[in-house]
Image (cartoon, rainbow, N blue to C red; front, side, top):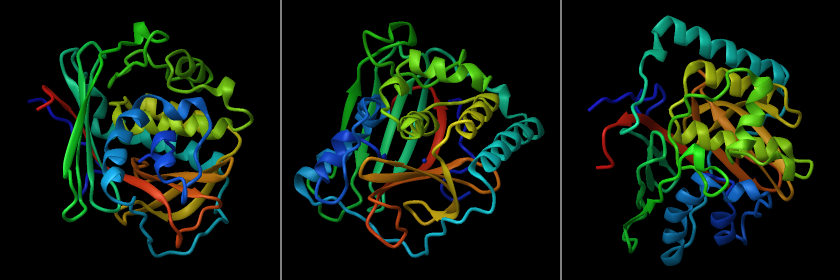
Length: 300
């Protein structure tokens, strides 16, 4: 088995902004209204969250910390630095040599504050059925496990179905053309973002960073695109759903807010948080941590 494990794996990335999951938590978390919030990864992850919510209350965790919304540098500066760091690290460690093959899968694992694990296998090119699986971390929860098959859909079929793809070999590394690519392939829908472009973009990029195998130059382009998009704010210290701390890149949407949390040295994604209302590190939130991403030969 050809396996590449992400540098930020536990011991060494739920969403999330998901209409379906947030609807289950309606009393505590405000739904996101953008059409893109129902897309792709969010739909797959929702299966685990909703299944758990049928038999138990949704778990919201409190993590210690004081929200620091006074950034040491502008979001654009931090995100540009992240892009530079990703490229420099890749050059030093030769990260870009592994090319996933069409018959392989990109396998990702996330963990929520209750300890529930969500596993996703996406076909490298979307031509083969993918799979999701969740394992509850809540004691005596019934059912304790669940899953779902993902219908094959390639990038060439985008528009007739939502691509379930784990690798994007033709994704532009130029941030000036990347946004058009993301819109064309259904990853974002900024035309319908209603003035909240950062929110729509962040959700789409969350999907990519959590479930796709991205080349270093593609990750750098993502950071540069975020740097050029108004609406992001940097929170120097923020914890993910399992307590790992990094730098938060925060944004708002109608009724709530969210943040992507990155390792402050490598800028690998640690996880995501969403809040009903303004960010509050001592208050209820929804979120998940990325444990690992790897390229594997099968869905078993």
